Each structure stands twice: as structure tokens, then as C-alpha cells.
Length: 151
Length: 260
Image (tube, rainbow over all chains, first blue to last red; front, side):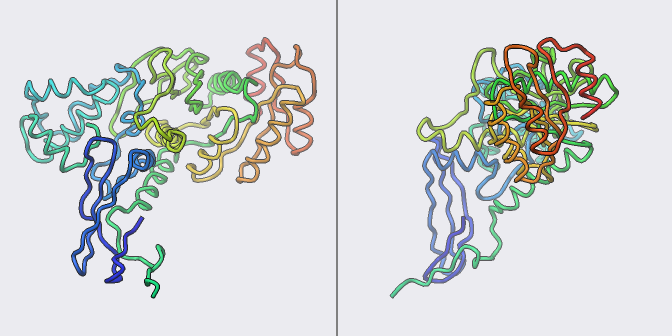
């Protein structure tokens, strides 16, 4: 999918993606010549179709996680099927970030089927930035920066 | 005055979304994961209830007992049975780096099945809008197949058996995901009804570049009469690899494994 500024005859460039949480998607594109911005608004079915392809509008912000689509989209998965021990430390050998009690509480609300993966993503994010403790504020920033859907 | 609107292919400036590149990366991930797999064999039938999963499990165990490292990917996401047929424990799956380790089950066969992932007795359900779910559900199942291929640490295998559901849809998805069309082993029962349905599936596979590895005739010697195995083998110029009786012995499976 591409957007053309007809007046300038220039291909518009991706600017920003938003997931308002109601199953829809908004993606903004800007004309590099005149600066005009248009937003593509996808309904829940169209948004789901994009998600089901395992691609991200605006580009991938994370390395693919193992069984990412299955774990984020299946609603009837066993909560205890994945052994989280290898995931919760995140990548690399750096210090494992701590989780504040509030962040732990928020993480506990994530379904068990995907929790280990979510925990790893946040741990990787914190490690990459030298963050010693993961708090709800860190989680919010990570969600925004990484474009995490439903995490 | 009509607007001057260039076409999609005429717009060639870099696209930050890079959707085509993301899809290409997915394909490379599948190819990379399967680089150490000697052959991928799709166990297929156009007909339901002919015993594809039963044959897959028996053959996988026999191959493993014969010293050939074997994996089973249960691609029947809505009716997964391979885990039970292969005595897979309800063990937790370990994530190691960028992959999930397959369960090691009977006779050392490596297995991934939706049955291991789902809650007992629950159907495969997806998050998403209820309306028009037929539009996106198929894509999500194809994505699950891709991840079972690309995100499972299959390691070095002589043979990866892919147990397909009835019909041809999942085969089509598999053939599109793999670097080369898989070999196809077809399972039929002796009846003419099964023959006709399986014939269509075999034609479908041939048209997509697959090599037909042979026919297995299952449920032989019981209530089902006919000669579907022989007829399909003659029509397609391939061998009947095995005739599986209602109560097969280890020798039955061993002989099949020798011919795969």
C-alpha cells in the first residue's frame, strides 16, 4: 500500500502509526514536498488482516519473537505451556532489570500464554537502555516506542 | 480533466513500512530454520478420516527407530491429534533464544502440535473482530503454520513430516512458505469415494510442483472395499508404499519407513 500526493505527484512517506485500542489502526503519511498529511484509518477487520500477515505498517520495530503471532493472537492457549525461565532474563548477558511491584502487578494481568514473551520484550528494552528497574512508566514508554499491540 | 495518478509500480521511492521486505524476511527465516532438514514430506489426502495422522505417527516412529532423525509438524490446527498419537506428555515448551524447542516424544521423534498449546477441550480461538472472521482466520492459520516452521528449533532432521488436515488449503500454504514444494505422501482408504477425493488432491500437489512420493492405503482388509491405492498408483505412475491393515504391527510401519 502506497500513498500518492496527486497534486505534487510525490509518494507520501510513513509518518506515524497509532493503535487506539479498539481494534482499529491509524497510520499517517506525509507528502515530502508540500507537507500535507493524510491518515489511513483501518477498520477492525482490515487491521486484523494486516496483523495476521505478521507484518507491521511503518516497519518492524522488534526482532521476531518465537511463535509471536500464535502467542499474541490465540485466545485459547494453555497459560502454563511456555517455560518462561529462559525468556524473562531478556537477551544478552547484561544485568537483568528489576521489576517494580506495580510493573509486576501489571505484567500479571497479561495472559500466561504470552506473558513470557512480553516480559522478554520489556527486559530487552530496559537492558538496551541501561534501565535498572522496569516500572509502569517504562512499560508505557516502551509500548509507545516499540509500537506493541495489546501488550 | 482527469487526475494524473501514477500506478503502484510507478512509485518506487523507499517505503518505510517495507511490507514486501518483511514478508521476504519471513520466508528467509523459514528457509534458514529448515536448512538442516533433509526432506519435508507433506502427508496429505483430499479426504477426511482416512488416517493421515495415524499413518504419520506410525511412520515417524518407525523412521526414528530406523535411526533417521524425524520431526512431525501437526498442521491440523483445528483437529490436532499428533500429540496424543505420539504419546506426547503435556510438558511445558522451552523457549531458547529465537526459537521454541519441539517436544521430544515417542522413539525420539520431535513434535510440535497445536494440541500442546491449547487448553484442554477448547477450540483454536483467535483474538479479533467477530464480524467477517472468515476473511482473516485463514491468514492467521497460515501465520501459525509459518511460525511452526520458522520458530521451532527443528535442528538437523532427515525427515520432517507435515501432517495436513483434509483438503488442499493447508498444503497450498505450506508449498508457498517452503523454498521448494514439499514431497507429498498421500493416504487413502480403499474405496472409490476416497480415490476420487485423493486424486484431486494429488493433481493439486502436482500442479504446484510437488513430487508424489507414493500412496499409502490405510484401513485395508476391513469393511472398506475397493482398490483406490492401486488405481491411484497406476494413474500417477507411483508406488503403493504400504497397505496398512486395521491392526498394524511394528513390521508394517518398519516396511513403510524403508520405502519413504
